[in-house]
Image 1: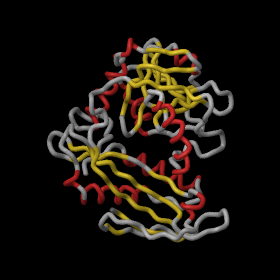
Image 2: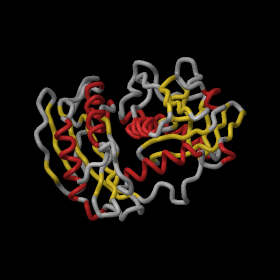
Image 3: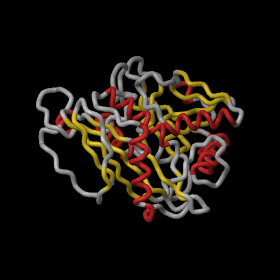
Image 4: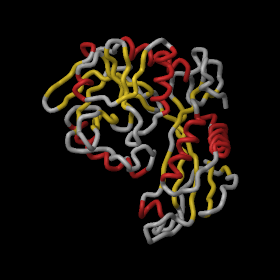
Length: 318
């Protein structure tokens, strides 16, 4: 793993590669007491010709820097971030699964590791990157999932940190997600915290729906994460001739859509078969994968896995 620390007010210096290991940290560390930290997630994939490909890692670097500024942490430069990611992937090359058998998940972390008892930025920060091999996300094949709309819980509010991949954004969603899964659903759909009617996110993924061959996805207003798979889906869909509207998506409109899916690093594109909201159930494509969802999934994964030409320059080789 890659490891380096930085004092508040100073510039990051190049880090070192070391064996994956536990961290020694003060009980007064800013990340433990006040949640001052963020993470990124990306995957390295092996192409059929043996190359190892990343997917738009520069966007992870820029998003992490924006998040650091929001959380009062020193941003890691894009150059340093990418250097760390490439080094970690190269050093863990033997753990990258064969093409189609899984990926190497790469996890960068930036957090306040210095001691601080007052509610203030920590005096020291740690940036590290580690990796772990993961199997195929859809082990039983690509099947539509069922979701439940939460009327009780909200993921983020205007002016908060919903648009940042902050570590503190994820713990509050664990209990609602667990309850939904106990009821037979794959995940929760969160609505906005002001009017309680507009779709925000699906757990930790972005939401899309299709109506009359037009794609709709919630606009970026600071309350949802600017997903890299989300952006790539939008750009890919437009390149295929589809109209994409980034706007407020009313849950009632979403329930009347022709298709629905969510997008994120883990699943890439996951088709939605059913949505339950206040006792009403919407079913899409009779429980089958919608044609536009399938087209986008096939096209995007083919680019990511090096099975098709990458006209966008999204997949740099390590």
